[in-house]
Length: 392
Image 1 (cartoon, rainbow, N blue to C red):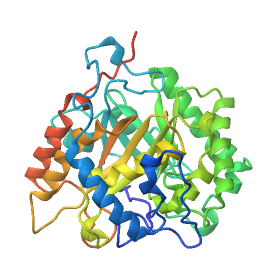
Image 2: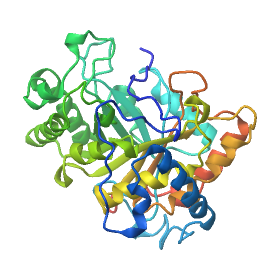
Image 3: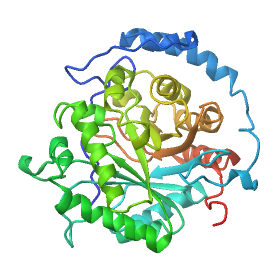
């Protein structure tokens, strides 16, 4: 079946190009103790945008404090990934590549020819529907994913949805937390992940309900989400699944900051934190935002309010194109390595090479110049780290 991106994005705010706060959620931003981060205190979306444009323009011009990306390199034994798949000396490069469930490997290889390198991480999406021979959306680690995973890492996004299902078939967080999906869905997929690890020795990144901050109250309350996440985590643990790197992915839109704090499952349940920020431009009728402008504010807020040491992931990043300035998307991707080196703890960056619904919302790489720019960025030594852990 053809991949269809789940309808999970909130409309963009016209002043920032980022995700709009769902009705009924708070815009409160908790005051940090560090005065250097006071730009994050502004609750007005317009004020946030004005402050960030000024501050980030200066930060963009100054560059990273350590352009070399830190001591060590890909050949340094100290740069081998950790048990939680963290590359100590740089960052992984990955992507979401649109595909049918049956041609993932071919589409990944086609993308890799464009960027002239192998991806470190391939990102795929699944729902919680029943698994059949003809419908694989609910099956973690399909044959195609396992084939791709032979030479790459996998990030599996598992969503509490039944794409194309009826309203009655849509799982709720309360049902998941109560164990009502254990026998039919969760246990079977946990066993598949476990068997994959036993057979290959490989771990997978697993995200439950990415961008959950856009799904409340429809899916339940923030507390319901936390209980559902913890239930899945604990169920996998009880079933002996020890090859999962638990990845919690939010939009990164700061008007959801109150939700982020309330929906964080806790340090004992999260290994990596991801966020998804884009330059939407005319897709959401916004100003053009540089790569730096899309990333710094969310990164700094997470470091101040959620975790100052968890590895971070740009789980989706990308830019719209500008038909009137064809070089603009290429210039945007050229910023990526330098800015990444200045984002403390960001250990993976996954390019979103697809579209969002709506006019002017194609976020895929638009032309040869943009591909050349992304290819150069992906060749940076900082984004080329050894995949094998020390000792294999």
